Amino acid sequence: MVLVPGMGDDVQAIKAGVLEIADIFVINKADRPGAEHTQLELEGMLSMTEELKPIFRTVATESTGVDELVEHLLTLKRPERTNVAQIRGIDHLAIAVRSLDEALPFYVDQLGLHATRRETVPHEKVTVAMLPLGDTRLELLEALDATSTIARFIDKRGPGLHHVALRVANLTALAATLQAAGIRLLAEPQKGAGGHLYVFLHPADTGGVLLELIQD
Ligand code: CO
Image (cartoon, rainbow, N blue to C red; front, side, top):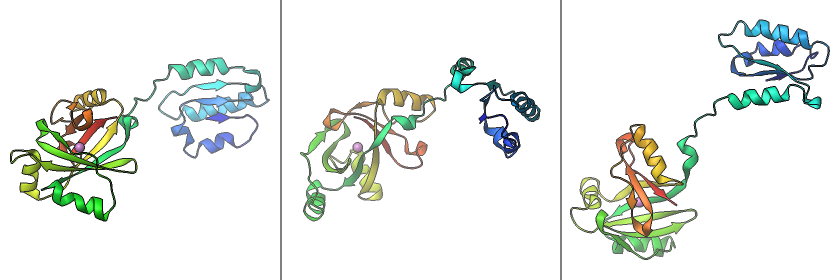
């Protein structure tokens, strides 16, 4: 928070809760008369708070005190980068269907979407058809056989929304961070349709939705 001496009610304003949120106090234009008074008043106010908060005096036009302020700012711990910053968007929404041949005409003929070439992912026991739309895609999944997770999903709940895939910048790093935080991965990151690296997170750790992370 930056104060200027001689404003009269500046320290009074701090009483309105600002004292609690500000981490550093700077009295700028500290060459003005009243700087000493502002500092004393501020110190008096700050002595009532629990944390020790620094007060800097600067004259911005002459750069007085600015180096000290910058030096202090550089010693402060930067907030941890959150995982959110690594999420680029929704890569696709995946729908489990009994048959691509039966499901696709609705999306292609009725909705006018374009389906890309079908691709079989043997280790997931699925055949995939992608339907690009805007910045994202719909992924239709058909089971290769009765032991496929898609077949088991349909047996249990019927066809429908199966998972949501988020596009991430660095999947390996994010997966490791999540795992360290106790989030369960259903398998190690591996390559799937289109050669993209992907991993599934346990629905019990994501609010009940099967979440896939996929790398650009
Ligand atoms: Co997917």
